[in-house]
Image 1 (tube, rainbow, N blue to C red):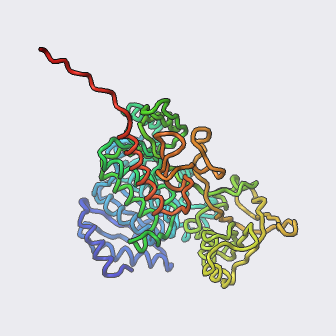
Image 2 (image 1 turned 180 degrees about the horizontal axis):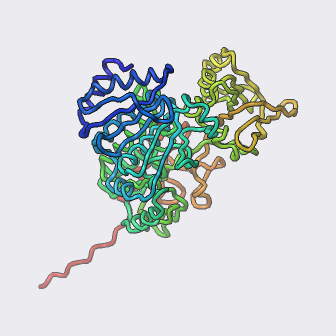
Image 3 (image 1 turned 45 degrees about the horizontal axis):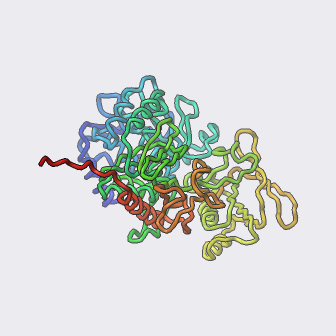
Amino acid sequence: MLDADLKSQLQAYLEKVVHPIELVATLDSGASSQELKALLEDIAPLSNKISLRLDGTAARKPSFAINRVGTDVGVSFAGIPMGHEFTSLVLALLQVGGHPSKATQEVIEQVRNLDGEYRFETFMSLSCHSCPDTVQALNLMSVLNPNIKHVAVDGALFQDEVTERQVMAVPTVFLNGEFFDTGRMSIEQIAARLDTNAGERAAERLNAKAAFDVLVVGGGPAGAAAAIYAARKGIRTGVAAERFGGQVLDTMAIENFISVPYTEGPQLAASLEQHVHEYDVDVMNLQRAEQLIPATREGGLHEVRLASGATLKAKTVIISTGARWRNMNVPGEQEYRNKGVTYCPHCDGPLFKGKRVAVIGGGNSGVEAAIDLAGIVGHVTVLEFDSKLRADEVLQRKLRSLPNVDIILNAQTTEVLGDGQKVTALNYTDRSSGQSHQVALEGVFVQIGLLPNTDWLKGTLQLSPRNEIEVDVRGETSVPGVFAAGDVTTVPYKQIIIAMGEGSKASLSAFDYLIRLPVDEPAKESVAA
């Protein structure tokens, strides 16, 4: 199951296990159970602190638990955690075995102090790059607090349950049998949901913070670069981010980041955060900005009000709030979001195995999504508003070669239809003839570009007709002392490497602005005759 190199690497990691752990497998005669058995039989001999039992009694087959011997500490997987979830497996082995996590002490204590019984189930897919964060967060919570239990379920192996529970996006989390949430979640986010007083305490701590020299709003590539460049100048630097990593967290393969032939979004986001934490930067995660109040005089303090109710103050502000997926804005889209309408083919594609789906958009992202999905689903219909596809020619040739793909041009999507629980069809208008058509399907993958996250800035900064922040060559906005960088600005070409450069430039410009501010004259000393 595991090759020699992977076994060697895993054995080195397992040397960090402190407490004896037991793998307890629940299997049947199927091929997946035999595959899981082979995996566990590869792992168990790699450490003298790991034992294996094959007499589990869990309801799902195949599944297995990782238990700390003599305690009620453990985590469970229903399926074979390879692919993106192999890291989740390794971390679970280490953490159940007593190796400390990288979570802050504050979060660890918050989780340990949670009252009540919590039974979490996470439906994920092995190709989902958003799922591991959620799986790992809940696994760690179950290790820290014996009242929390978690099982990660591979939806591809338990299709009947996926259908019965109407799981149409991953990760989807259930708590005590009821829907909890869907999408990437961190341990901080989940703990805050369960700890009802967490928001008020966090707001009090933020309000008490002294003013920053540079406050970066946003934690993507532009924000991370800005924070690092500011901190290296030795000035007081803060980062307020709704989620550190930003849109990079939703990016799969990255092959054009110079000097790095290949990486993946979550891996790059983790590296960005680690790099920022190497400097004296106050990182305030899970904080969404709601209002910018500019300083009333040169050298005064700008204020950023947060959704938590807190207010941060700073001499300069760098806005790097990035962009988000563009919605179709048609009836049914929001009603069936995560019930058939989705925005991530890599994450949710496996849930539509053998079904009919549509991809909205004929640019590179749309055509790449259609090619990816064609290998999983039964049929793909690509709908493009324009009279031609806009993707690179090499991608178009690949798409047209696939037997289970239809391409419809001049198609304006007008409505997503469903039965109240899930998507059943899509309506579109032929822009050439004006005729309306309906396509029967189970999934709609929206790939029509991005919108800048600037709603909170309208009326405060000068925005372009596309609602991007207008910046000059130095990254400065229409408000002195306020700078912006990355996909949220008018700078062309929304690329990670460009965002990093723009974030660095904005930070250097902010520092230059600070050192040129007027200072109060020092009091003159009187000298006795």
